[in-house]
Image (cartoon, rainbow, N blue to C red; front, top):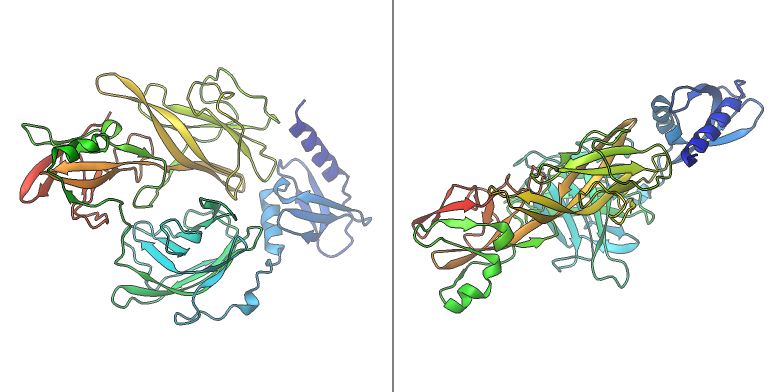
Length: 477
């Protein structure tokens, strides 16, 4: 009835007919992922995805590694030879050695810009002076807030499997003739040695040897420097604005003080513009979706015709309506790349959301998604917010966990005491499209930077400008 069922039967037959007679000394017992079928055979060859087993009469069978038991998969990984990565010409680590360079997506690359964000430890290496570079990598080191990379060494061998502490790599590149950069993400399977030296006047020397497993075998080797005093910039500057013309020209992106009380009232849906992009800090935590189940978590009105009976259901919670569960279904689970269906409009119909959604990452499944989230105001009124997020599934042996973080924020201005300031609202921890966890960011000194100590305000907090106090009120649903 289902293709998957026939595939399972085929694999079962293959394993069942392998004889138990050993030809060489390395014969061992092999078990399939169901644990129901065990055979004895010799491991002849292993590559990234397949093993070749040889039975006693010399007949050879090739199987996908993922169809073996977790224990056998670990054994296979231990027998794999390191993939050639041209390390022979890599010089020893030297902070004053050749400038970091190599190739990204088949294109020559030289590190010309560096940036380090202390919140989470996010290292950016870019080529070019444009705001959106043609080539680069972003390395998420997952440091504690305020933790310095000074003196640290990060090593990834490519055999660790997924772990929360393993750095994630985002590779940025433009295809020839392309206008905007594309991304490829690596949460494991790559090799890296990243060393940081001791700071001198806020500048830290560093050295990297990064080998990525993409089709072009992207590679960066050499030294660079990071400035720990640098912070991400928020677009827009402070300006004096007393004219009536200026005060009304951009009313759709400006929040003003309320006449009489002087309180600053901010309603992001009315005053600010939605931006489907990373927040100005560029930092992300992560929120875990529901556990994955073979049965739906809620009643579905309509489902597509799945390719197999082996599917997993889950949901993510967004908004604050009575129906805040957005169902998703993962299928093609027997392949290296899964596909998915998401109820993006939350109408319990998985057939009207432009599915199926293909994998956009390097693991089993990852994708950028755009939702319409229902939000309910205190007065009971409902409206819908657009909400973009990055969703992925971590797979480690038989353990599967779905996670996500937002890829959107709201941007605008506030006017306090006749001055207009750039401002933004975004989420840092609780990704639910309600924007309650990080308050309002205001570039009070007009330097294009965000200061966590002096420019981040919660609802009900006072803001001091020119010796005068203004009470901030954020209109949350």
